[in-house]
Length: 577
Image (cartoon, rainbow, N blue to C red; front, side, top):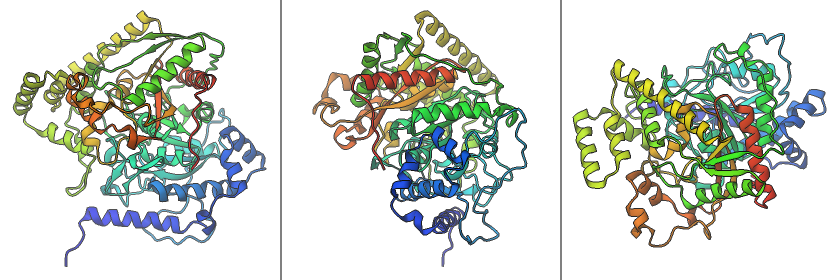
């Protein structure tokens, strides 16, 4: 008789533990929402916190309403890594399991910071955020059964502010990939269409938010992990500059790698909620919880009535936006122009070059910290499986393949990627840091020369991808998102429209067209997967890019875009789940 491998054993145990947490919830959580539940779910963050703090809305009523949506979201999308509801009945526990509610830290909040600003607000956290007494798996089976001894800075702040940290959400192994799928928890699907991905690596959080199972998700972003899932699921997310949001106790995908930082940032169902949450977290003085957090108070910004100059990145030079994504960008640009804003084409320094520098820095140690926790029979996102093979291939073979690629296809982007991803010496690594800083300088110079207030782009050239197609879409599709991490600028995503089979379809003979024939390998992979008919009804967003530490301005700029779209008769209305 064969025994399970440690990997399979821990995967089974973790899924059983999650199911037991669900089964321990009150029976009413499996029922449909009542009128009172829906009223609670419709409350803004500001309204919910005010009513809870004044005692007109109870914790149990909030948990009841959101608990029902959590259970429904899990059933529909498989988005949960752990449930942390306060038990309302005797919950069965064992010595190997964490308690049914997060353990509050002994951390003392600042005497200068206001308290209870997030009273009763349900906040979910990505399963890379430490919560005392719970595993932080990051999608790895090797991290099962190793609960955190203390909570992350943001969790301690949330608890001091009165928030309800109620669930942890799924990630792909190690937080890198285009789909949220793991042996540990299974595949997380898109709430709009179960045949499509919810994005990554915060796919669980995005699916939960779209399903109304939380008001806020605490996420991380090294290459678009806040913005790509927001784009896929029709919600809001903003990647902050490194140091603006507390990140201590939030585990990164590439431990010790600081050349391209991992930003800890929130996501939300509504833009107003995202802004209010940001302000209240900063008002809690997060630098008193996390020594790496910049002591920068919240600054009031009002862009109402101001005529702004917007640059538009129509293409990144790697993958042209697919028709649905291009239409969303066009709609946003047209709506802004109708409101009197100035729209100009924005030509940044080569995104392909900046992306190549960033990838080399991220993988300068051949991503050893990412691959090390993996067990031998543990499956990865196909994008990372391919990266692993490339990183470990002898350099002379990669150089030969790059030469052949240039000769036969002329695809310089793909050829450069093949030959550049290898382990770097210390000197090479430092040269790349210099190249990164020079690229950041060129980005700033172009911004100054074109005198723009903000830049618009697609978050990704694709809507949500069909499950199992990450290998075809490739990591190169993430360049427009990741370039913001490399430059360390603020970038937010908001939903604009839905894919339409009528207006967003490719011509029947597109793959025979000259346009297709001239595309590089990455673009052909993306367009080979794009299908407007199958994708009909999936959300599509735009990305608003600002400058470093301009979180307040970018949130206001996102409002300007949203209000312009509404004024043009193109208001985005999400599906109600």
